[in-house]
Image 1 (cartoon, helix red, strand yellow):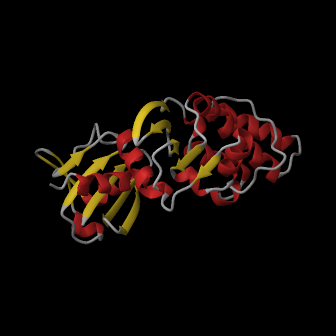
Image 2 (cartoon, rainbow, N blue to C red; image 1 turned 90 degrees about the vertical axis):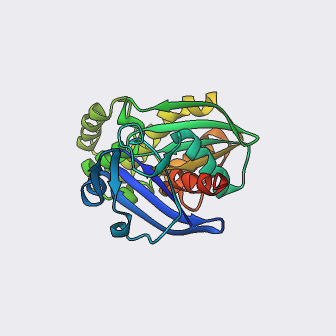
Length: 254
């Protein structure tokens, strides 16, 4: 049994798995995870895995946003992009694709050929193409994130390139009298517009879509229809980085 941890900016994803698949998984809000299950030690953060409640395992591999600032005692650390590529290949069985990962506060596009990362682009400077942006927009519209993710028809034009200014623009469109479905579709379409240049520059016929944003339907369907590509969402899109860590664990167990 192997444990993989993705230390995200908004959430910590943890899986315990073997070669057959994921046995247990947990998702925690990041600050709560560190507060409830971590204690500072001489060599880093000591995690009380017994209290986490995922059972026993033989090895821990970690990655993610927090890997450079928080050292989990006893864990092997691997690069975030590597973890996500390994996870995507294991989940889909594909070796040639472009990986799109939209997380809480960053977005990643990775071109994979013959099972190797050949190029990548990331955006961690602005929240405008991330889950955080979608959460904020859903709050402005007064709907759940799950409902927001369903709308893609007749999108209202939204042009602001900043998450903060985007909220003001959306409020202005509400005042103009546009319907919630049209406004929500507009929000989803802005995500597509912001990631479109990266997807063009690292193009593939197949896009593997991961991250919490991939749990919704609208953005993936828009990518497929606008770019004429196949979009594959694996079984565990939000756990992909943690799964990559787990797979790495058993591949290196010897």
